[in-house]
Amino acid sequence: MNTSHKSEDWLYTISPKKKLIDLNFKEIWRYRDLLFLFVKRDIITVYKQTILGPLWFLIQPLFTALVFTLVFNNLGQIQTGSVPPFLFNMAGITAWNYFKECLTGTSNTFVKNQSIFGKVYFPRVIMPMTVTISNLVKFGIQLLIFTIFYLYYVFAGYDLTINNLIVLLPVYVLIMALLGLGFGMILSSMTTKYRDLTVLIGFGVSLLMYLSAVPYPVSEAKAKFPSYVSAFVEYNPLTQVVEGFRFMLLDTGSFDTFKFVYTLTISVFIFLVGLIVFNRTEKSFIDTV
Image (tube, rainbow, N blue to C red):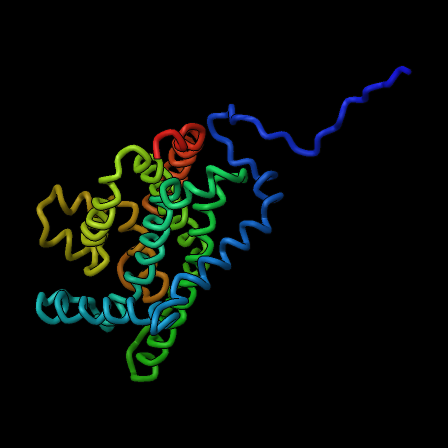
């Protein structure tokens, strides 16, 4: 009795990545339910076992802005023009926090998820994407709190104006996401071999904040810092994000088209480099973690 064997048509084929840059949107879209599940998990469980819960979304930026106002503006006499110092600081902190959370949340992707990665297949890039998307909720809440204080100062008689360039807000959010995601994927790949980096990341991010014009205007850096430090601050892409954020929301500071394009270009470049390193690391990380 002859039996004919027919070739099976597989729905999906899992094979090692061969492309240098491979985001594979089609595969990510196929796993979109898993992506949304991880996003929901991150939002719900981060503060589930804390006493104050989601209030930490509000407490952290408020207390940071208050400390910056007391130390830098009251004690250090840093001027913010016609903009209330507290509101000035809160605008910078809101922008900075989104980048920081994206960076620190993705910087330990391989180590944090090694048990899942070793058992189940799915596009690994979903995990850093989850962090970036879930942090948008935190960013939205903090932006809402900023808006409340903004309206309070307006009704208190302060002359505050939203610049027409507010239409660029989604672009600035994208820039922050690309920078945080790109640097995070690079660091995540490095921490699979060098665990000491996990300690240095928190320390380095704290130092970077002070070199990104978060607690002071760029004009103050140019006036008071040595030329080589002020040049670094001025052309730091994160400085341009913070400065642009304040310019849009408070109409203070300056906007330079060249620096905006420069920052956008750098963010895309960092993201692509991070993606390349991430894709190369995911092939062999399970042997090193």
